[in-house]
Amino acid sequence: MEKKTTKPEADMKKLATELANDAKEVEEKASTAVKKATTTVKKTAAKATASAKKTTAAAKKSTAAATKKASATVKKASASAKKTVAKAAAKASEAKVNVEIQDDFGNSKSIDDLKAEVLAKANKKSLKKIDIYVKPSENAIYYVADGTAGSLTLF
Image 1 (spheres, one colour):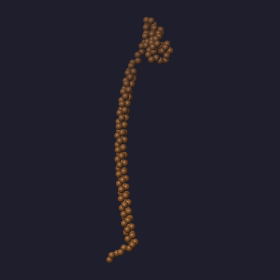
Image 2: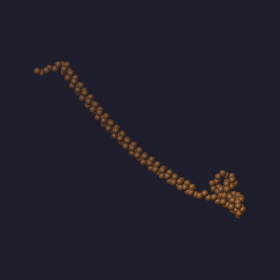
Image 3: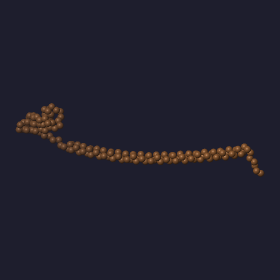
Image 4: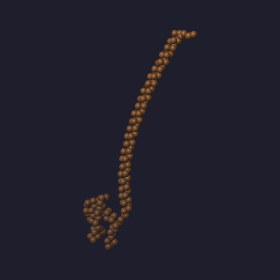
């Protein structure tokens, strides 16, 4: 015996079929949207990766240039420091020379005394260059202080 379907059952089957078809259509659209989104994400990720690689390469290049420049600066500073240290060492190793000039009567003057007298006579607190000539036979000191000549009595 065959069962006869009633009108409401037939409508329900039709409605179920339509819903199943609609669900299948929505699922296909969703699948297509997911595929498009996945493709877009992959493309965006590839672009971001390429951009990051370019940025990394540029950063490496910039870092290399900065390192090279800093190295050159350090070498220059090191050379300058070595020169300064050498000059300071040479200056420090120079012995302090004290020269005394004496006459036959027991009078004496040091080079520092003569320098002080020249500074006083020249009316200056400091000079760049002083040349002093001592002539004991004339009891005189002749000097040239920063290009200005003069004389003093020795004793």
